[in-house]
Image 1 (cartoon, helix red, strand yellow):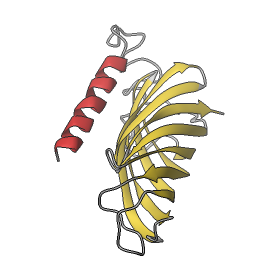
Image 2: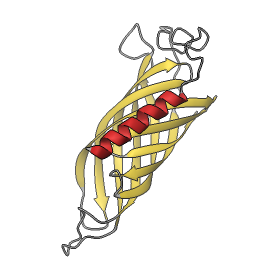
Image 3: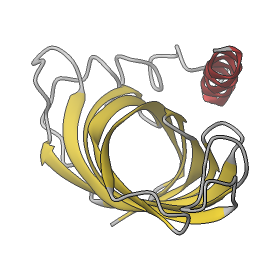
Image 4: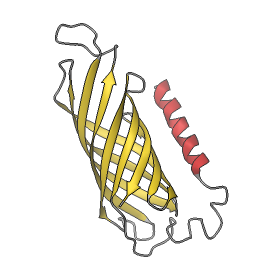
Length: 184
C-alpha cells in the first residue's frame, strides 16, 4: 500500500509540474482551442508509445509498447473536450525474487511478456496536456512456469505534448510506466 501511495504522489507531482506556469492564460487555458471547454469537433491522431517500465513496483524492470487508435474522437460528454481510444500492445519485463516460483518450487528470476488491450478515456485539459484512465485485459506468460493467465489492467496517466507530434507519457496502475508517444 505504501508503494502505491508513493507512486501516486509521484505521478501527481509530475502532472502538476508539467503544466505550464501560464496555463490559465486565455490562449493556453481550458477555454483555448484544444482545452477542456473547447466543444468544437476534433481530429485525433493515431499514436505509438514506447515506455520504460517498473514492473510490480519494484519486482522487475522492462519495456512496453502501445498503439493508440481513436474510436470516439469527440468523447461522450458534449460540453467537454474528451475522447475514447483503444490501445493495443505488450509489456515485456525481467522479474526477480519474491513471490514468483518455478516448477521446482524455488524462487526464480524470469522473463515475462503480456499482450494487452485497453480502453482509454482521455480528457484534454489544456492544448498540450491530457489526463486519462484506462481499463483492459492482459494475458501473461513467464519463463518460470506461470501463465498463461488473464488479468485486469488498469491505470491513470498523463500526456504532455512538447512538440507537434511528440509527447511525454507517464502512467501509474498495475505497473509504473514513463516514455514517449509519437503521433501520426
